[in-house]
Length: 194
Image (cartoon, rainbow, N blue to C red; front, side):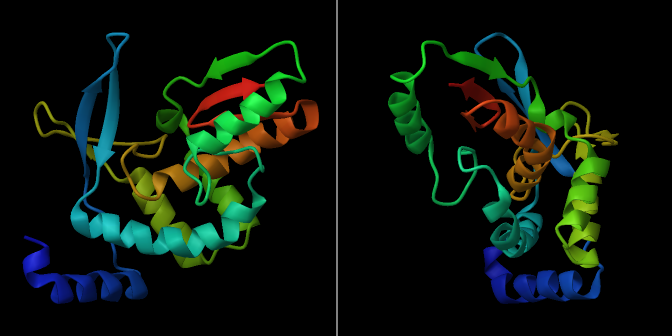
């Protein structure tokens, strides 16, 4: 449907982003069963919103990615789970213990105020901060009854920009502390300290 009028749709996105009038529609809740019997809740944006997020993410990533810890592998350009495993293999011979920590529902608990403060600290333009706030605060539409759920914390797991915002939050809330205290790495919310 989007592709049938692609040029016109892309123009609308560009025009609204440039004029400050892009308001993300609600993200669609999608529940994915986990092996432990619980559910992972994804927030799926519309095609138009994914494109808008992708454009802003490219702008932000160029400035933010270089500040992230070298051993942070999750959702990073040019880094992969295989790279993390290579580092683990190299370091496991130097240390006699490994500690694995899982940050439960990490994407759901990212504090908006701290992410926005970090964006300001890194000199992101006001329009970038405006859109990041709107994306984090976009309501979620329930898959059960269509009800709109207000979001005061977290960034929708399933959004294009969410991993970058989560990495920024994690950088300040955890990586900098770990860098001072331990040599380690993390992968998608799971941390292995070596």
